[in-house]
Amino acid sequence: MGDAEVVPFLGFSSSGSGLRASFDGRLYRSFGGERAVTLAVRLQGGAVVGPSLLDTPRDMLFLSGGAGTVRGQPYRSLGVPVTRNLGPEFLIGGRYFLGASVELRADITERIGLVGFVDAGSVGLDGFLDGFNDPHAGAGLGVRYDTGLGPLRLDVAAPVSGDTGDGVQIYIGLGQAF
Image 1 (cartoon, helix red, strand yellow):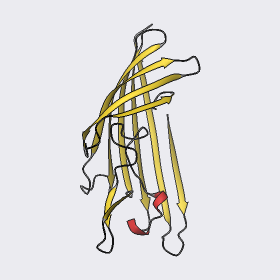
Image 2 (cartoon, rainbow, N blue to C red):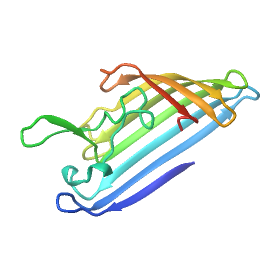
Image 3 (tube, rainbow, N blue to C red):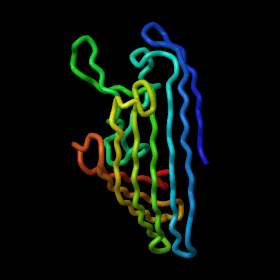
Image 4 (cartoon, rainbow, N blue to C red):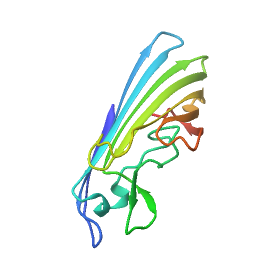
């Protein structure tokens, strides 16, 4: 299962024109009978083709961190640090992104499940793994409660590499993470 998207964009006075391509692929494999264990794997990636980093519209760039990419890292906290005109450093998205997540989901009772997970990602300036930024990762545990409409999700994650300054992150949601 997966999604792919290609979005062309036109620049105006201070931005360039180009193309943003991304994919989000998922694979699920269940083992066992009544109390199944499911291995879930997710691969994400994307690239911006065309303008330079600073000429790319900010909403076309890739940031990482948070529930949708790397749990354990703060939301959209991982990107490319930039200094403009000798001013202070600030963070913007990168032109390249790779991400991977692995979950092991186990049903404990008919309604309660446990999940262990590891997420990793990299935001690049000039390539997917260009060495500009170190890859970042997070890991954690989660509980799922089947409401009948879908699972209620509580995940607790911590960074295991990259910027680890913010400590534990907590995520609450409906449905599985992916």
